Length: 428
Ligand code: HEC
Ligand code: HEC
Ligand SMILES: [Cu+2]
Image (cartoon, rainbow, N blue to C red; front, side, top):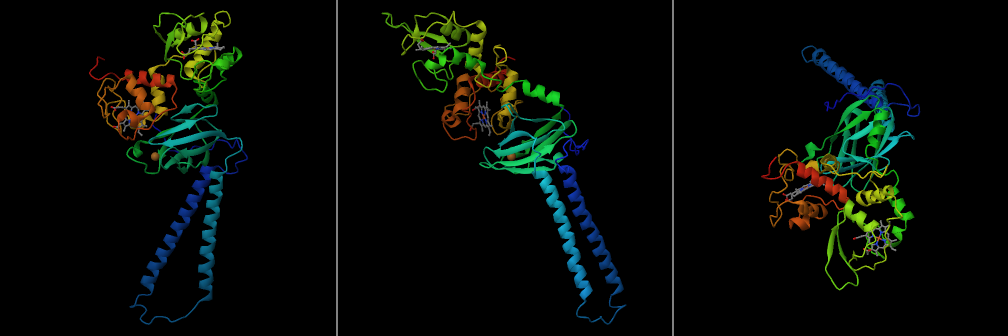
């Protein structure tokens, strides 16, 4: 990654005649104007002062002149400063408007600040920790904060805006040159404030499109559509409520407890509902049934194509936001986990290299005794629990936030990532 540069983006062409002034140029012009006037006044006043000190010292001028008023002097020193101040105000107002009024065709991106990282959400629902934008296109930011007040500061675009919890503020900019521009947090927001860095990455439109497509957030929940069409949703909810059948929310990766209804043998059979398990449950004409439910679910062997089955499993696994482009089931990888840890802000508090930030480093964390009250070893179950409710798992309040909205697949990605950083005392 090349070092973020602070240079002003060049105005290559005014692709948007609507934004009369380029905001960056306008802010700079105001700055120069105010600086110029101040410098001129400083020079003028200092020169006059030195001149008067020499010209009118007591030796040369033993008897002071005595006069009570001078109409012209009063007019000049009232009117001139007023004009100067009004000129500065007019220029400032002009650039303020240029900074405020986003062009109507601007690309809208949601910005969420939190301790101690940035989250950018693009149209369509994709998230990232660095702000990727197409070059030449105006970008409108809607900014807010999850916890305390932060400040979005992108000097290259002369933007500095507070992000306030419970309030949405707006800003816009346009990168006219490809490159990377640094983002700081400008409001002191706690321990890791100084590390709350990110960047605006201005790329070509094609590269931006590719970036968005990399992990399409929701290109239509085709797995869900299949389930709707095949009637699954008549018996199964997706929101956690039980109906005729158990809810399918969070079913992927869970362990189902099955029995054979009416059989003398009351033994239970446990089945992990992963790809293979789900396939069995959905396709086979089963005698064993989820404990506590009626045996009314039909077998779907002759009703679902392998493609459709894949789409359903894909949906159950990844939810609506997952890739559903071709029924190819996405598998969790440590790299996805790393990206997610960055996007979710974990890496603002946890390092990957063994250094201590606010929280313990992820490096070698798995298998280590935790900081929890019961000193339990950090294993998969521990991480799952701490993500859901840190205070409950740790047995005391903590600055580690809860992540209740992660999907099962996302938690798997994070686990794989943690495991990829090695286990405590483990072999590497
Ligand atoms: C007529 C109602 C009905 C329909 C239609 C139906 N199911 Fe079911 N399903 C059930 C019932 C009842 C159970 C629990 C008893 C059992 O194991 O069959 C169940 C169990 C399941 C389970 C196991 C859940 C768990 O928590 O262990 C899965 C997965 C499942 N169904 C998926 C599907 C899919 C996918 C479809 C559509 C292709 C579908 N079902 C259609 C009624 C239905
Ligand atoms: C605002 C800072 C912050 C963020 C963001 C954060 N954590 Fe933590 N985390 C902590 C702190 C502090 C602890 C130590 C718990 C304590 O002692 O209070 C901790 C503890 C943990 C532990 C247990 C380690 C141990 O030894 O007890 C795990 C695992 C963990 N975090 C994972 C994550 C993951 C995964 C994410 C992102 C999804 C995340 N954290 C986001 C601050 C944070
Ligand atoms: Cu901050």
